[in-house]
Length: 200
Length: 200
DNA sequence: TCGATGTGGTATCGACTCGATACTAAATGC
DNA sequence: GCATTTAGTATCGAGTCGATACCACATCGA
Image (tube, rainbow over all chains, first blue to last red; front, side):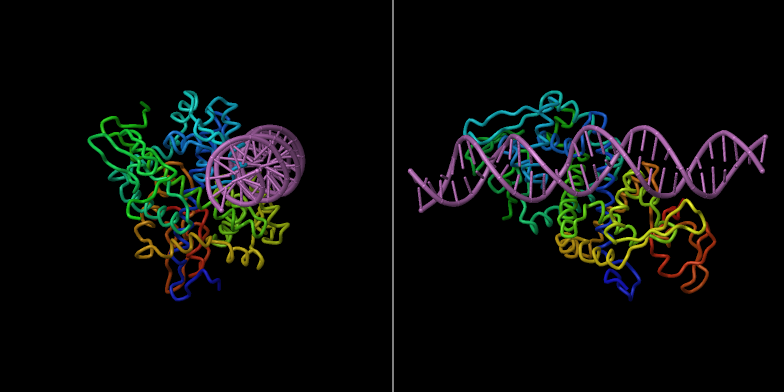
């Protein structure tokens, strides 16, 4: 008998059931993303890159940050970005502060593709139909992601306003304690590469 | 302003947050699977195929069933199986009932690879450490998967004992109402391609 | 019994991912 | 200044994946 069974209960242990669920839902998401991207000649990873660039802040729209976010190597991500640039979905801009760094911006065409393709129809429909706006699912997944990231010594890429460097200076006026730059209300909702949970 | 925002709340709508969470956890799982498979020269999809074959019943260990389970094309899956057979991780056996059909069996080497590689250390540790054995997460994910599959007109691949064809004939003695074959207690826990939810 | 149709599986091709390696350029630290 | 680190690019090979075409066998209807 395999070590995966508990002979007393004749039951797969909970970890295996949970892992199988995550794997299957992940595959389904990937399949849907593949189908959605196919209409524009894009692979799943291309759509994911565009989605990240749409929701990250001005410190985090670089190839290096995207590399960490996607968990790939910088060489792979560099290729992906080359393809997206050729297709006119994003634009590169050299940084004025650090001449090694490149900043990435979605073009109008990139935003249009994203609005059309993500989330895929199947997920949009099912997630939108969850009771209470899927609050229970969101809480469970958020907790899981936090645990995974902390166990993995990985950056959290959380929203700016939930970071321990975030400072409130007045109504709609904020500041980042790390860069000392002022932040708008819109800024405070974007994902940041330097994000650290408030409790830390 | 993009259609993804609700201007009144300056907040991403819940569907986008949920989608992003699923995508990120799925990517993390894939990255871990890639690393785990690398030690054996395997890709994520190879480990997934082995895991399926470990947990499916004798009606469902065929290339066609695996194709449906993984959501890929039969050509793609055929290639994957060829590679796994060459590596000695599974064995093909022609069906005696339908001479078109091939049945797939894990070899001892295949089971050994699987026991070593899945679930990846990161997930095993984090999922095992969830409060209450992760019951809340399991419930939320199970509900989500059911909704996705029903919206997608996809087979559920549920455990035999939860199927509407499942019949209880005595203590530890069961029968499948579809094939009319007797089933053991172990059989009743395996995944079946013909599974239909009991309520239907 | 015979053909039409459907299903299970394989083979081949091209576009693309992804890691590995090697490389350049710029920032940083001593 | 010189070594080290970091950001990014270029190139290569193994492999995924969908598309298409194909074969063997089952099923169904006349």
